Image (cartoon, rainbow, N blue to C red; front, side, top):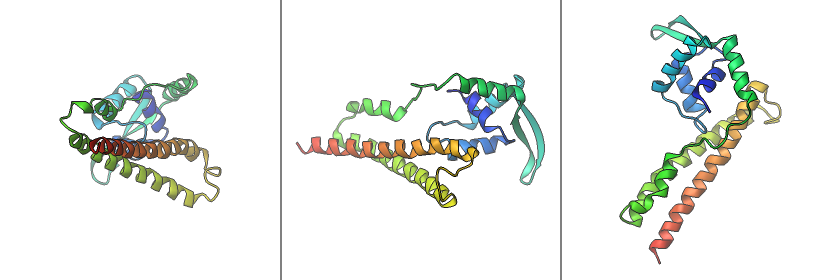
Length: 185
């Protein structure tokens, strides 16, 4: 997967760098992370490649803000990327790599101390995603069938996020329980 293509997808409507970052934090958090230090250089490259336009507009909060929007060439690049089919086996989960090496910690309590904040984070993340889904359900009585296209397809990613993060919560709980049972042997 490519940050380039995700940005092209986001910028179907004009948005500022701040708005883009907010989407990563609120909408894409269950499958992609990006920092402003990654977003702005990529936006510059996309503009140089003719895939985006940039317009300065007045801001209520200080200096003018830049609004980025996909060009027809950018739209073609996005469609080409989608037509290539699903890209798989690209996930990188640092916490899972750390878990693999937990045996390097001095004792089981240190391992549990590592996993408990992970559990708390996953639980909060899951609750956040469920809250978004429940809010959408209240707005659309025949959820998800009556969602308009611009909400239906993003909702498919939300549905996986709810299931995937829920499974991660259960996995961390199981890991902690297994370590505690080993301590009591």
